[in-house]
Image (cartoon, rainbow, N blue to C red; front, side, top):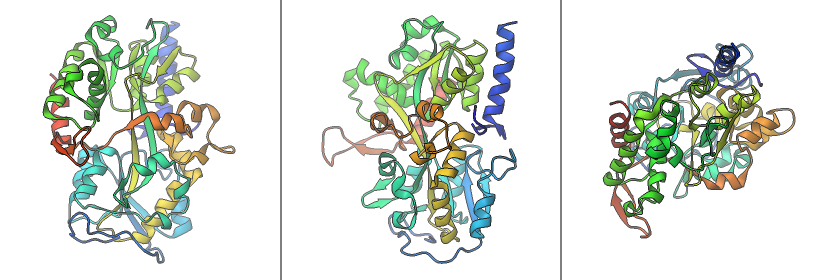
Length: 406
C-alpha cells in the first residue's frame, strides 16, 4: 500500500486502517473585494510578486507540512519556492468553514471548499472568480470537473480532489450482488442485513435516497437529486428514517468504513472507492458497484477569497496544488482521486490506485452526478428558464438529523 492515504483525528487514515485490519483479521482467525455584493468581484488580470504570506481555510488533511507525518509535506516546498509563508485554519466541519469565509471581518486568501460550501460562498460574493489563464496546468485538469465551477462565463475555483459514492458489499455475505441504491434503502432488501449496513454521515446522502425514489415513485418527478422541493426532500428523509433501524453506523471518515467491514460487523453500505481498494489489497472479499439508478460524487476545489490580502501568493498556491506531484501526495494521503490525471503518470500513483478511483476515466466521470449546494430557488425540470421552490442546505441538514438521529 502507498504511504499516503488519508487522515483520521490527525493521524494517517492508512495507518489507522492498517491497524484496524491487523486487529480485525487477527480476530477473525482467532483578489481583495472588500464588502462588495455577489457578482461585483472581478478575476485577477495580471499577477505581481508574492506578498510573503498566505492565509487559508481547509478541512483536515488537505494541507500537510510534515506535522502529521514527516514524509507528507507539500507546504514546506511551496514556501521555499515562493517565499509565501502558509498559515491555515483546519475547521471541524463545513458549517465552521462557511461561517469563517462569510465573516466580512476576516480576510482569508483561499479555501478548499466541498460542494455544500462552494455554492453558498459564490452566491454570497465571498469568493472571487478565478482567471484560469493565470494558473499553469489548469487545462490539464479534468474538463468535466472544471465545468462544475462555472457560472456564466466565470470560473469560481480550481478543482483539487474528487470521489464518488458506490454500493460496497462483502461478496461472501451479500447474495445476489447489489445493483442499485435499493439494496440499501428498500426496507425489504435492507432488512436482510439489519445491523450490518453503513452509510455516509452527511446531509448530502439524501441525494442517494432521491435517486432511489426517482425510479420507485415517479409521481414525485425528481430530476436533479440535489435540487429537491419540500415534498421531494420529505420523501427522501422518510426513506432514510425507515432505513435507520437497519444501519450499523454512519461514517464520517473513510477509515470508519474500513473498520466496519474489516471486523465483519458490516457487509453492505455506501462508500468511496478508497475503503474497497484498501480492503482488497488486504485480501478481504469486498466489491463495489456503481448504482444502476445513478452514481453520485463530490469535488473539493480551491477558491480565492473575495477579501484576499495576498492574491499573488494565492495564485501561486493554485498552480502548486494543481501540479501532478502535489496531486499525488494529496490523493494518497486522503484516499481520494486527483483532478490532474498526470498524477497517475510515470512513477507517481500506482496503477491499482488510479484504476480503483477511476482517474482519467472520462466515460465514468460523465456518468457521475456531482453534488452542488442545494438552494431555495432551482430550475424546473423540462422548462427552460422556469424556476420552482426548492430546499436549501439548512433544510437538508434538519431533514438529515431528524431522519437519522431519532
